[in-house]
Amino acid sequence: MSTRRNFFHRVGGLLAGAWLARAAAAASGDSIPSAAAGGNAGHASIVTPNGRTLPYRLKDGVKEFRLVAEEVDHEFAPGLRGRCWGYNGSTPGPTIEAVEGDRVRILVTNNLPEYTSIHWHGILLPNGMDGVGGLTQPHIRPGETYAYEFTLRQHGTCMYHPHADEMVQLAAGMMGMFIIHPRAATQTPADRDFAILLHAWAMHPGTSRPDPAVMTDFDLWTYNGKVFPATAPLVVRTGERVRIRIGNLSMHDHPIHLHGFLFEVTGTGAGPLPASARWPDVTVNVPVGSTRDIEFIADAPGDWPLHCHKSHHTMNQMAHDIPNPLGVDQRGVENRVRKILPGYTAMGETGMAEHSAHLNMAAGKGGEHAQHMHGGMQGPPNTIPMMMGAGPFGPIEMGGMFTVLKVRDGISSYEDPGWYPHPPGTVARRLA
Image 1 (cartoon, rainbow, N blue to C red):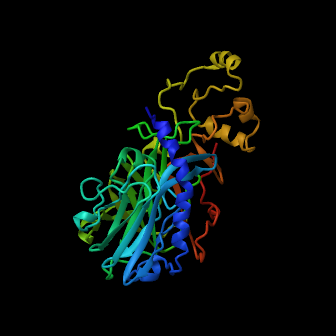
Image 2: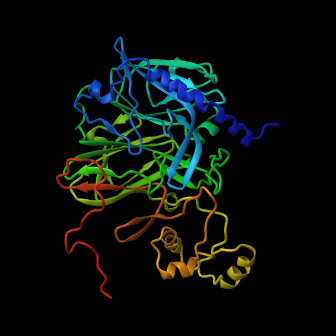
Image 3: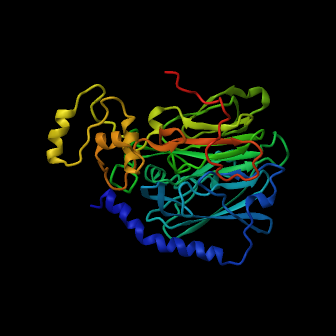
């Protein structure tokens, strides 16, 4: 009988086919403009941190996109790679960006070892284009290419994902954002318009395959497939109007909290909200299968966190089935275990911050105290620390769904500007 592990290993032989499919598409000779080139009614093109927008070809007035479902070698953060499934070489797949009223054709090639389909989540379209394998269409079998074609009758923040073997395919990373700009200027344009897709993974320490059998006990939480500190910052100029579109295809709700600003919730999966229905907040809960848009004026320079407020969702690869060691003197046990497992280090007696000291020491940044406490204990291969990331004042002690909104005066480039230079007298200081 085939096991789940053997099932996943059969994927590897299809990587060459995926590359050839993309190469053939690129070699067709057609121009490939970005979605922005088609005109967005004065709206800014989408910025997908750690991601990209899918290009298209304009054929007889139809915007034609190509998606390849395939295995991808994905880096969650330096030191942790996964053999995931996605589209066009990445998880999540590239953001599809179009304009209300566009006729779109999306060619989907399946280079997975099993059949698939694509559901256009939240998009109004003919029933036969809805992408539910077995119900509204035949499954897309390995090696086949299917065409989806429909006219966009709405605008807003939508998503795409399979409706075939969802437990495996979603858990392995098959998903993406689908942004539809309004044809007319029906809402205040944003100067910077970001798209972030949330996901949860079970990447057990020492392994490289996401575990699709996990229902609640996940250990990686990602923004666009990355965990902090690998999450790209959101860089804006002081005074700009910012829109952040957040989609959730994980198995948990996520209360996303922004420091430093009062935002308005301006959109849901059904599209932009009228002004009378918007509400101000500092945290927006994004339910499973939903999208939320938030908007604000970035009028306060600085480095402002944007993170999930479920505390375990800003951690990486945390074990959840161990006793609570807080306040427990483990020195005797530690010495006995080291006789069997050299390098073993007991942690947690005074809290979990010592994990950051261990990380800094391993990276050559630790001092004598860190070396004394941890002695260079190494984790399993292909595993990253639970808390990682260093800031200008020390360990940030975050992972997972955490990134930084970097607001700067007068910038002309949206590259990472580095850490914020605080004016004198504006940083909390020690009194005693």
